[in-house]
Image (tube, rainbow, N blue to C red; front, side, top):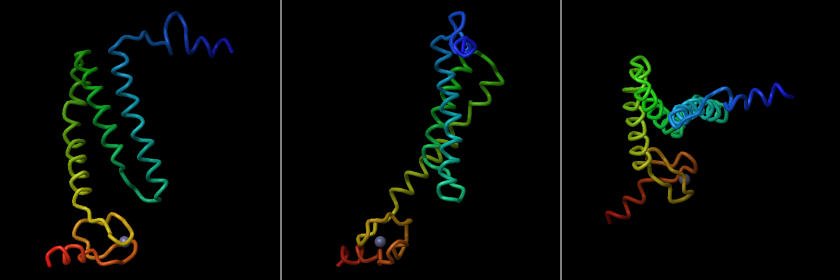
Length: 137
Ligand SMILES: [Zn+2]
């Protein structure tokens, strides 16, 4: 098992990496970026259809910003360009996601959150326009 302990910790290096604050920033970005694939895959396998959970966009945003910071520190133009603009679609997807959630209608019968402008609850079939009708009377 010496080979294993040598792999983890050898010559003052953890996993063969000479650690610094910037290495932690870069690796934290890598971990966030890499984890998002598993979260997306898990959500897709669970529902048996392709879905992108909101955590995917948060991890993408955090990961790409950390990697952008790291690449700016390294002053590597290829690396900087790879993460310079990716935050734009990530933030836009998050904005659209939360706007959509806010516009969802909650069913008064079963509590299910239904898509905006729904007339009936997709879960129990109750009319969703009742609440608005009683409020306007
Ligand atoms: Zn319902």
